[in-house]
Length: 435
Image (cartoon, rainbow, N blue to C red):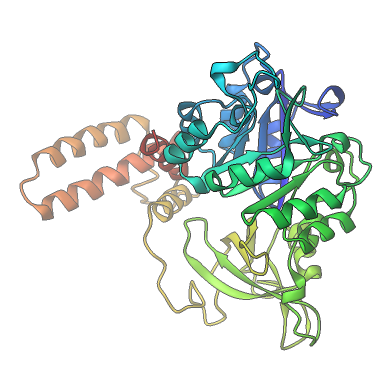
């Protein structure tokens, strides 16, 4: 898996050398997040919070969470903070400095026993948000864990500490600090040692600057987090994604290496499955439409290239073993060659998202006599009040179903007129659920 990093400092996207010298700055974080999301989760790091600076980047990070599937880190030191970010949409939480400090001995330094694995905090965070959502950052310079934005040495050894924190998290993030931001290449030896020491998922950052290094990390079973190499153009995300996959599992010695590719609609319904190769993946990202490798014709083909029923790519994800792929895509028409909506001979489920798509089409291209198109702002609000009252007066389950359907329809018309998506409402409900 390839993870693109968005480091935030003073509400700007930055890249630092050695965690100190600002090498570049950008002011397009939302556009970056939307682009990066096509290739994998996005790591959003609040550098100011990590370094204890009195600057709030929370508003910007909240906006980024609405654009991409993100893991959030930087300055998170309590279970409540971790849960709050999960509630706002973070897929995972990255915990760093707080994981290696005894708060009762803050200021005592390494000699005074300040630095040790903070097991009570890790246990509390894992219990609050789930171990599967917790990533612990084991940032190290020459084998020693660093905290406070890489400013403070702890005296804690990388390998021993990684083993100690592994039971609390599903993933470790190892940054080779002495190589971070330098584009000088990754030191694979500590990575190999760390990979042998822990069995959880391992993501590596710091100095990665070539596709060969990404392939080397993938061969070790590691994910890669890209920063400076990505922003300087040394590595492209499409090529990095291709290199990160376990192609050795997809060839069988016969023809090009191929991996299974499952396609689902934005609301999660399975549309079709096929096979993809490195060329097809690159074309998928280039065209923005899902491409496959036809085993029968032994060539690349784009779904819908003759029928027009293409699959507009939203995002691609690899599974945990990196030998199977899942594409989320918007179909332009029936997916199956038989004319069916899905290749699995199932009817399209009538979801809330589908309802909104129908309503949006009626509002965008009204036809004579369309009731939906005739609902102006005043009328739709009046109907919502009317249907809400009728739902409250319903006397049996049949009436509840009918009135609830009416209310949902009119509420969705209002949402669509106001530019509010079903996904945004569901995300808000999810946020409340996770509080």
